[in-house]
Image (cartoon, rainbow over the protein chains, first blue to last red):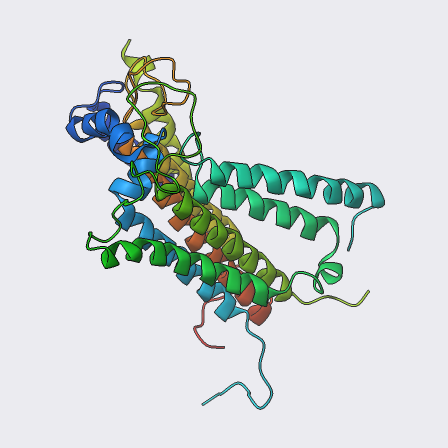
Length: 94
Length: 155
Length: 116
């Protein structure tokens, strides 16, 4: 009985999730003014053949700075969790 | 727990080829699909191949965590430093002051399909190299930390 | 035909529901983390498929067949999202290893007390 209720809830969730992208038209986006500017003037202004790289590193370089800092903090967190105890340290239990 | 001799020899032969392919993806980020993050992930996969084929105890002497932590910090500092040099010239932060200029990476490119020249695109190849160094060091530190945290059962 | 135009969206909704069902119904901790990863892959796929134009090529000018190109900005946003997913997955799996060392099991029905 319980698994039928759970299956019905997931079917209702899938149907309601599907109703959102159906209204989009696949293959003809609506608002493309900014990307038309990037494709037309990106090669002349930044002298790079790859438009995606010039968007990531030149037009939106601040987002890439934030992403590098997030990756650095993730690596610092993993290195912190696997630390060995130094001499003269012990676990503190209250 | 190390693999057989065939697997070890194959991994030791394949690792320089994977390294050169990853560095090609990083360096040509402004001409072909790729860039700093993708190339750094490919190089880190080559390092993991060497660690898995030879066992972790045999690799511990040569690949130390301290070297890769320093490499990751140097990559991030190079990325921020190159972007901050533009402030000393009176331009905004992150301004591409080497593009279309005539200096080290500054050739001009007209509009339209062409065959691609490595001398173009200003500050972008330098930032690609910095991010590639950072991702290589970061992913290798994650792998080495997780492997050192497991206990070995005495057989 | 209406059905062929929406195949990418059907795949995205299927992946999202599979990911959410794995997080809600499974008991092993590693399987829950894999469900989170599947859900992040579905969202990245949705972000890339929003910028497609019919009959256009990739936005790269090196030996390009034509100058009609797809949108380039959603691909840049997806790059950032994938890297943040990698950092999150690394931290989650480190927590799983530490829980296994402390409790001896990764079954969430047996890890109920906060401090044991």
